[in-house]
Image (cartoon, rainbow, N blue to C red; front, side, top):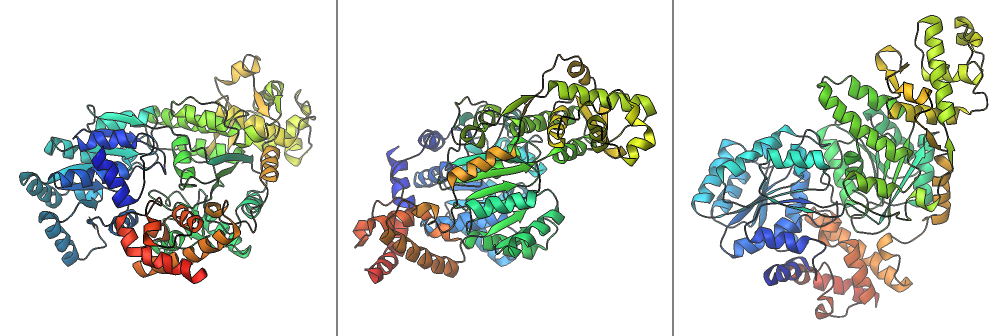
Length: 618
């Protein structure tokens, strides 16, 4: 691995590999196929970029990188240029003339890496280019990024990825590396099958992101809860807020702006130019909050996202993990915060039930949703449950809301039996089904016009749950729906229906344990951590006051350089690198050598500028 270590240090400026990187890189350099599962921020890109450099030096030619997003290609190619690596992309942003120029450079052997989308890679024209490279012995390797997109069980399924099997069929001797941050066993099997990676070596890293604190609160007033969370812990910091609908995205962005935050909306209904402008601002500016649907996020490499918030329940744990993983890519403390309630459960169930997919597929989706609901309702360590979903055993983390402030638990079995009995009695009395609100009114003995209209005050279950609060009953309902003991009929005003699973609960054979409150623990977590208002950026938290001033000056210099290069600031230098420079207070270019993140090309290109900034402050 001497060559790979030398490349890591000289080109990228890092002194050592992390986790399984060295083993993966060694395997791919030697020509082996690989499936790599590594969490967001774990350094997946280096696992194919360094083999591409090493194999080119050995005379094997160019590496082809299949990447799903134009913006991601642009930034990754820009980052490679900054590191002194010859790379290019072929996508729809290029004119015909520019695309021809890239193809000529490719055939002349001037590129180390070429990025392209799956739709382009599988076209006859592109395959003809690959044929010519193979005939010349100049096709080094294929890297398939975001490989979970090949699976119908993945959260970002793209049918175009399945056509990538042609790479194995047509270029059998060229090594392939498929990479993803999220794949449970079902998704992993799909990737292997559809990309024909049966003989590939699988590298599965820990899915743990210990710097991320997971907190889930029960929805009461979600917008106000979000505001308290951001203002209390992440004022002035970059973050992402996910909402389910486009309308909600617009509303929340407007509310955040009225509160003085720099917030932008992002969803598929916006004009492409507006989406690109907002994404560019998020990537290139400090402290921007992006309010978005899941249309935003795949391939977002911004390292200093300090929080990811969900105002609506995602569809499954893979989506949740992928989205929360966009926080804290720099390894510094970050938050994954979510608010969810009964309506979230109803909505997700309805979307599955109304899907035109086959019953077997729907059953798979329900199982994935159930796993996420179990995480949300959990009273034990959230990280243990999250990692267990991906087949990884762990111990309580001490850093999620349940660990920091364990919630009180109450036995909801009797409440669940009363609730199911009420649903049965109401249906039996009138031959009609009713929604959650009315059922809770009957159970709690609340006399309403509807109760009087249908004579439900005469039922034996009327008022037997008077001691239970509406919040408690909503918790019971959530769990009964989540476990399939109750069904919601979305086609009939979200009415409640008993199922086969109701019987075990009614007989007392199925216990129902519930957390007393989901709000209170998260509040205690916030108070313990304290407000970050006026606090220095996370990367500079451990610096002296003088070093923090140097850090701020270096960030301002970096912003100017990034604007002039039309690149995100972190492509020039990560915050962690600037913090290390600020702490070292170097006086010469030699003093900058060995600082993590400063390779040979960046040292030559930016070393004098960095020293000028520091000398101006001396």
